[in-house]
Image 1 (cartoon, rainbow, N blue to C red):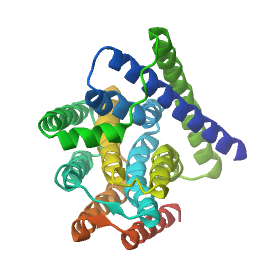
Image 2: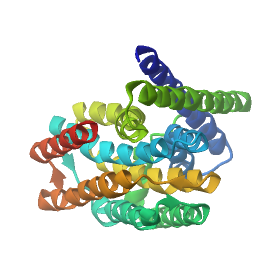
Image 3: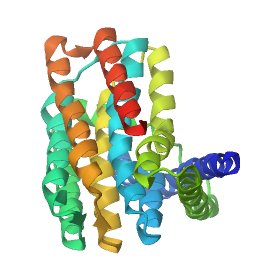
Length: 315
């Protein structure tokens, strides 16, 4: 079991490094091609930060572990809005921006509801995957168009993505892209293999490993980034970041994965875990509207919800 955990940990490190290299190389190359930093952030960087989860879900689906693929996404979304947001708010209250209430939250809730409706039949097929991708493209088009009309939105989004500086040579860019792609592939192999072996050796369902261990592992970058920003009193972008991550998790990861291979959905995930994800997303709305900030009390409530949920999943 210790070896399985070490393999999981090694796979996670390789995945995170691979995603980071891919973002550096791709965004640098795109900036050299005179693409807008905002467009680069909303496309390349957003997909790059979701790349570890994407590779894990594709690998899990292809190796007949659909519970890992779905558990990874659902668990990561719950982790983002309960654990990560809760801890961030406890450290320092989070001011809620207008766009988060009127754009990010409805899109997050809408994506979650659409997922719930489509998986009622017990699977997500390629046609439904194309629907997810189509909605994502429309969403990105809307955000980019709105940002061109609203300078404040554009400024906030560029701040949010914190693009790496463009490197001096194309060779360096392509080296980063190559190393990143190899790292993501090898990391996914190690991480999914370790998760499958851990579930087998401990005699527990892959769903539980996906919802807890895999989801927490793939949410670590968001957790570290948000808590560090919170200690620095720079939490104004945390909520939008986390909701954006949830939108991409559903629309891009499940969309692309289901196009490659149909994902079967466990009844427990459908009737329990997705309901928790919807409930936590719904709870966020009155918290945001009450004082236009998520304070320490709300953060503590979210953290307790995550602990209670995880306890129920495990036991």
